[in-house]
Image (cartoon, rainbow, N blue to C red):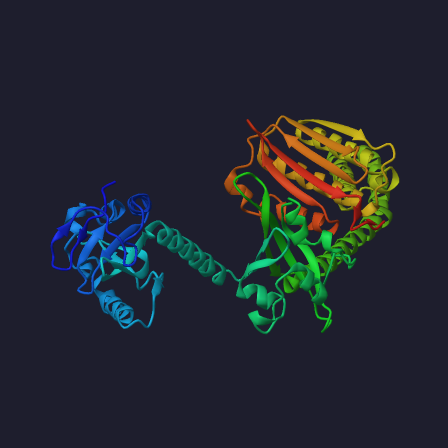
Amino acid sequence: MGEVRNRSPDGGAQDGPTQPDGAAGSAPADQGYRQAFFDEAADAILLFNASWDVVSANSAAARMFGCDEAQLLGTNALRWIAGRNRARHVADASAFTDGSIGSLIRGRMDEASALRLDGSEFPVEVTKSKVVLNGEALYAATVRDISERRKALDTLIDSEAKLAAALANIRDAVCISGAQGCSLEFNDGFVRFHRFKSRRDCPTTLADMSQIFDVMAPDGATLQLEQRPMYRALRGEEASAVDFMVRRKDTGETWIGSYSFGPIRDGAGAIVGSVITGRDVTAERDMLAELKTSRVELRRLIASQHSAAENERKRIARELHDDLQQTLAALRLNVAAVEQQARALSKDASEAAAQALALSESAILSTRLIISGLRPQILDDLGLLDALASALADFSERNGIKSDLEVVGGADAVMSSELATCLYRITQESLQNIEKHARASLVQVNLDLSDPQQVTLRIHDDGVGIRAADLLKHQSFGVLGMEERLVAVAGTLKVMPGAVSGTTVEAVVPLSVDGVAAPA
C-alpha cells in the first residue's frame, strides 16, 4: 500500500503523512499507526477540500473507482458521484463548513451512487466526516461498495415479488409457516377460505388459529393441534387432498376443506417451515353425496325394472308351460292317434297326419325353448351353477362349439336370486354374441366365488375377437343391456380383446352394496 499523499492548500504536493491540527507533538510511531490504518482500510477513503479537490486517497479507493491513485488526486470529488446525487452532497459539505454537523452517514442506496473511471455506476454507502490537517479543514469520505448487497436485496425483492404474484393468482388458500408454526405468508385465498373480512383479521400463528377454529375429521371428531395439517407438516408428513371439517367458533359456520401439506427443508434437510394449501370443497362433497344418493336410487329403479321384467317372464313362462305346452302335448297325442288310423285309410291321409304330428312335436320343442329363454326352471330349482352348465350344454349341442365351465370356491357363497339371474343373463347374452359374431371353436366360462366380498364371472372365446371400434358401440353386441343389468346390482363390466385372438367378457358383482347385503 502507498503512503498517504496530500495536496497543500496552494496546490503543491507534499509527500509523507501530515499531522492533524493540534497533533504537532505526536510521536512518529503514532503517525505510522495512522498511516497504516489509512492504507490497509478495506473501504475506500477520500480526503477533499472545500473546493471538492481530492487531496488524498488510499489504494482501496483506486481499486473501487477503477483507476490509479494518481488519477484520483486533484480531481473534483463530484466527478466520482452520480449526477443526480451531487446537489445533495454539496449541501452536506456546506453543513460541515458552517459547523452545523460534525459527521454524516449516507446509506440509502437509491440516493448514494458512485461513478467509476469508465463511467459505470455502482451503489455505495458513504460515511462523511470533517478533519483538519496542517491547519486546513478537509473532508473525509469513507465509501463502501454495496453492489453485492444490493444485488442480494434485489434478488430477495424479486423473489418476494414473484412469490406474492404467485400467491395472488392462486385461488386456493395458501399458508407458509415458520418452524414454530408462525404464519409468514398467506394469500387472499387464505382470507376467503377462513371467512375473514380482510388480511388484517387473519391470525399469525397456529395457536391463534386454534382460538378461532375447530378442525375436525370427516366423521366430526375434533382434532388436537398435533393432528392438524400444519403440525403434521412440521413433523415431516406430506399429504394431498385430505378432507377436514373446519368450524368457526364465533359463528358456528362449518365447511369442508381439502388440504395438501408438506414440510419446507433447508439444504441440510432440516425442517424450517411448512406449506399448507386448502380448498373449500363443501359444494363438491354435497354434490357427490347427492350423486351417490341418485346412483343408489337409479340402481333401485333399474333393479325394480329388471325384477318386474323377470317376474313377467316367469309369469309368461309359467303360463306357456301350464297352458300352451299342456295343450300342445294333448294335441300331439290326438294327432298321433289320427296318424295311426290314417295309415289304414290312404297314403295321402297318412302323410298328412305324419306332417301334423311333426309340426306338433316342433311346436312343443319351440315352446320349451321359449320357456327356457324366458326363465329357465333349473335356475329356480337347482341354482346358478346347474343353470350355467345347462346353458353351455344347450349352446354346444346347438352350435357344435366346445364349452367348458370352471367354478372356483363357492362352498359357502350366499347369492341372492337377483345376482344369480344377473350373472345367468350376462352369460346368456355373451353366448348369443359368440354364436352370432365370434366364429369360435371353444368357449370357457369361469365363475370365481372365492372372494367373500364379490363374484367374478369371465366368459372367454377363441374367436375372431372384438375390434376396438366395436367397443365404442355400446348399443352393439348387447353391451348396453349387460351394463344396465350390472348397474342394478352395483356391478362392473369389462369387454376385452384377447392378447392374440378372441374376446373376454368380465362381470364383477359385489355380494353386498354399501355394507348392506344385496337384496334377495
